[in-house]
Image (tube, rainbow over all chains, first blue to last red; front, side, top):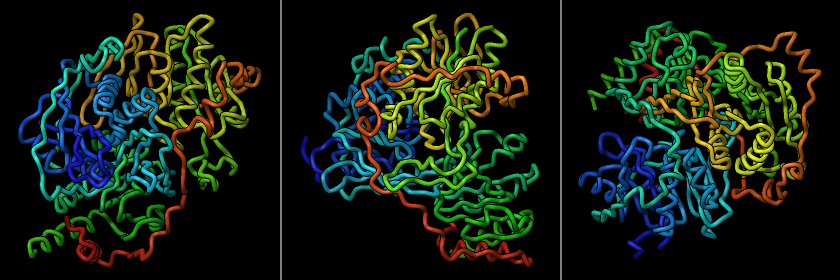
Length: 336
Length: 263
């Protein structure tokens, strides 16, 4: 494999591409960008791929795209995908694998690391190579109240990188990468890769017109204080082009669907801007959002713990503050 | 049916948590507790054995005070408890922990078989969520993780789970490894009877030697990652707190504009 101008030389880095409706997700472009600093980037695409998708992967630095057919719903379960990636490591000699840090990907990353003797890092917020070529990562711990920097001490690394950790940047001189088609069955022994589990149902949830919660640059979250009415939260999110999130209380009350829950047992977010409306800032919620770059809080309780770590806090009624802010934001944006 | 629940003792979430100079979780400060998410796993096991018959064994790995985690499991109603304790385990990463737990489950299975292994969705200190998957790999069992709903019938476990973009229903034949989320149930509080019964139940202690594990495979020696540096997050500078005087929304918009956050 030629160097292709990569800073880190010939080491192959496999990037598992997340996709939606045949298009790479934003998180995938971030992974490709991060991977360029680690070596020669090979994208891994599961299922059918379009020319447009291949070109887009090339635009962000992939020099090859491995396309693996997904013949059955079971083929995309984590143990099977781990087996596919292990096969591709054998074939490409890749030293490093990057995946987006989702629950499923963390599972497959762990299985892959176990099978290949690689070091594993999940929920990383940065990944580089150290001076000696080892993979060095940064991750948040204890509700983002601590930052850990660590290194993988063995030759092979599997890293799950959080969305928004890296700014996706296209390469200056993209190439259309060659597509290498693989038969999933040839990469792994179907029986070994958990033929015992059956997917009885798989229902994609309708994706809202708003950005994906886990990947959004701006997230507006409603808590107990919205008292069942998310409309001011949604309106402010729309003014900012952001996603809508919720606390556990709000989802448990049935005010909004469970998938919007931000926290240690829900979605972990690290947007550029977090706005909490009527959110108290309890520790379980904090664990899912404290890595946000800028934190804004609107709450009528001056003693709410969220004010202890908010960059900009407003003690006031969210039902008047949010609409006023949304209108002003629209006015400012219209001015350019 | 025979169910093994893996539980973990973690530093109390509400307490100040920190790392030691060499990058390990500081377990010296105050009280630890059974990871809250593991209570959902114990509850799921108890409900299954209450309806289908059988017994629940709670298992943990860790230093002396980790016994509190299995004690809590006994108080909730589990019948047996195992604590794997060995100085060589200190510093183990999740791979070391999985190796030890898998060996303990295998040993439990040696006399009569284990039908189901249940864990919580994540440990509240590390939040990696990968242990159940590693256990399934070690034990060569099917995995059905992150169950928001869990049922067992006719030797098959059925799980409904909500992932980032899809909802799935999975089925796997027993024996299997499952993990449950905090949506799966509402864990019971131990009652007086449970607390009294737990006092009388011995906790079986196993060492690495009891499980036939080479100490070099776990602990610091077995880890493939190393913490270089652990730093507390700096206190945010320039924090602003205002009280709404009728114009707070405008000031918020201005703050976002100044910081180029208007999207």
